[in-house]
Length: 319
Image 1 (cartoon, rainbow, N blue to C red):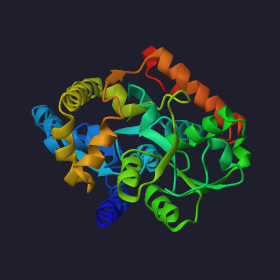
Image 2: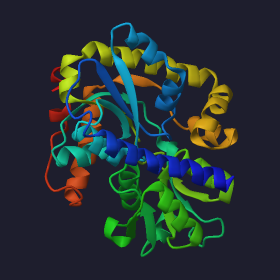
Image 3: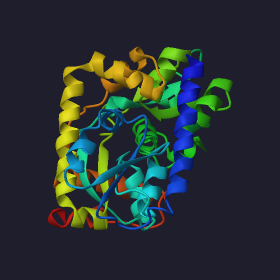
């Protein structure tokens, strides 16, 4: 089981290398090409890719589809910013870091909240029983990801400051390894990595995002592509909504299809996908306002170098 997990993680890391190779080739807007950035851990897009519905519909319009794999949201945003992809799906924190760094993207949609799909994990026999016990401890997390915000808000809720813990910034594969060998005391991570650690090494959930964060996921597009090809964005949303509803109606079947794609046991995958909403909607003013709160928090903590206005990264009709 562990070998399967590590194989899947290595595949994720390889995806970033592939993306880096492709960037110089597809650096500018191409009206005949749609490049979709995805993470293998993102079930909606992974299934959509596997089933080929988008390719079939866009082929009739003379549009080719290419998929580019990334290990996590921050790297995917880098790909979007340099013109390696046109469309992607990430957690709520990466767009804030990317906008603060000047990335040229727009929010085009979101997946409804999934607060239990991210959590703080501790080893099975850990003496850490509450979030307050994390004071002075080493906590692994992927810098700039959705769990970065979860950690900040969980600490705040439990009377601690971000400075009270020792963040150890590691991508999921390295964080898992550090967690297993005891180099860190806790690990803040999202599904399916959470579910895999629970099932495979009996990691214990110390706290998840319920009652603390929304844990939205966002669909983003390169600004020029979104303005020139709105009909393609609409088509993508139709297919994503269909895919999400199919997952909700068929959790075991969806898990069975995803398991070999993610290199995980079906039971792990099903636990993971049940924690996500799988409900896709166009971006709204309310969701942008919630995203602004996250951006303000990160600026106050000096995690981003300047204040940003999230609405500046919205489609014109949403500003």
